[in-house]
Amino acid sequence: MFGVLKMLFYTFVAVVVGVFIGTMPVGGRTIAERITGLYQVSPAESPGSAKRRPVRGEPSRGPARKQPKSPAALAASPPVPTSAGAANAPEGHSADDEKALERLIAARSKAR
Image (cartoon, rainbow, N blue to C red; front, side, top):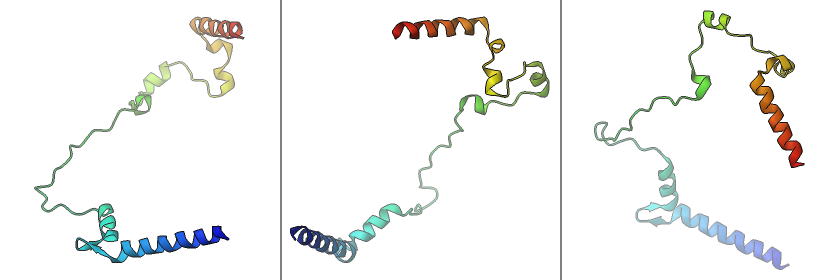
């Protein structure tokens, strides 16, 4: 019973606050007008007086932003594996890769 009364009281308070925000002028404008004014973009008074932000170049994003290789450079490079199975094939690893993998496996087996 008291839960229903609390809900009705809070609903009444919310409605009263909403009516106050929407209708009662504070300083010549309602609070709702002030809030919507914050989110609206107002044009500058004059184009010359507006502070303009400097234009920034596009950030480099690593390999995705590099220039594409020429066809001759692509032909000279070694073939890239096209599947996960080909990429994980033992002949695709260098000697340094094999040593690094052995060190990682040894460190993990000692940790267990």
